[in-house]
Amino acid sequence: MYLVKTPIFIQKIYESCTWRIDSKDSIYLTFDDGPHPEATPLVLELLKTYDAKATFFCIGENARAHPKLVQQILVSGHTIGNHSYSHPSGWTTKTKNYIADVDKCKEIIDSKLFRPPYGRLKPSQLNELVAKYKVIMWDIMCGDFEDQLTKEICLSNITDNAKAGSIILLHDTASSIKKLKYVLPKVLEFYNTKGLKFKAIPE
Ligand SMILES: [Zn+2]
Image: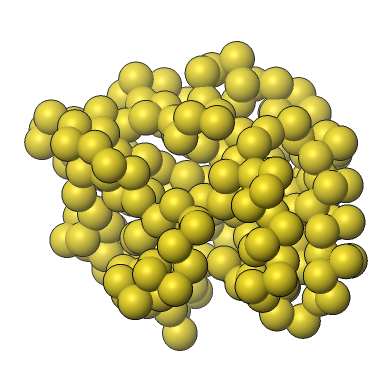
């Protein structure tokens, strides 16, 4: 179960997080859970083709395993964010342990941007994090990770809902590759035609 659009009331409750960016001409793609040896190069290649920039929220464990991919993301002009070291859920993790996991990722991913795994945080965790990071959520989730969702629905979840200023959640992971190959070029084409620029979220 997932919601394509993050409800406004949730955005209001967690208003110290960034849910969208105030812009009339830009749109923001974000890729979580990488880097991945197959998915990340595929995404980088497609972004390059359309002269698009994006933000990659890397898991510390994966960044440690694939440092060259992290470098490739950065030299291509994208931004990178901390997505914790081992991808814990904030709801079931003690705040002290949660923050330690985020700090462990920071040793590998030096970024002011943080996205909580699953978007799940306790208020106590959020309070500590906002002192050190810009906490980036999303307003559009297309469900690229959902097995039972078709690639066509995944695409229309984005094109029917995302607009200037939207932060779109995607994944550069093994389970998303098939959908990415179909969805990503079409999304890049769709918003290019509308005159929107794909930008990286600045730190
Ligand atoms: Zn994640």
